[in-house]
Image (cartoon, rainbow, N blue to C red):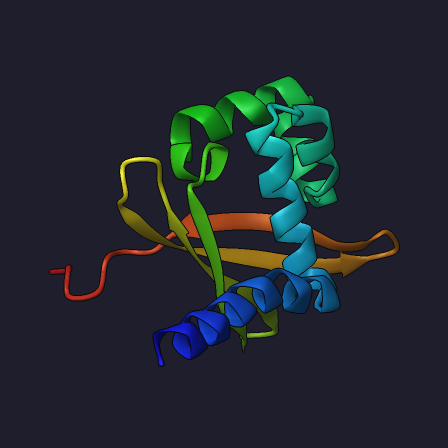
Length: 133
């Protein structure tokens, strides 16, 4: 029984990256995260929307912002795609990221589709469930 459960769990874990590859929007996010892991800020910047590129101007500025403000994105230990949804005409992809210390963060990626495919137009760190005023 344990072997069957392990085989099913393994199959599900292996299928998750394949499912993301079938979803170009999720693949964009995963590709940017891989670029950050490699400190390839030029490549990570390529996945940003024109608006984000205009704000930060250079891959180095963009990379410095991510390292300082989004350390869980710079060095994620685990990534899980959650639901995508349309909010007031904007497409958002929710992502659960576990950082190197084992803390879980939920981030919301605003996505835009352009001539080059899906691009990241902004990221918000969502508050933990049950935390708030």
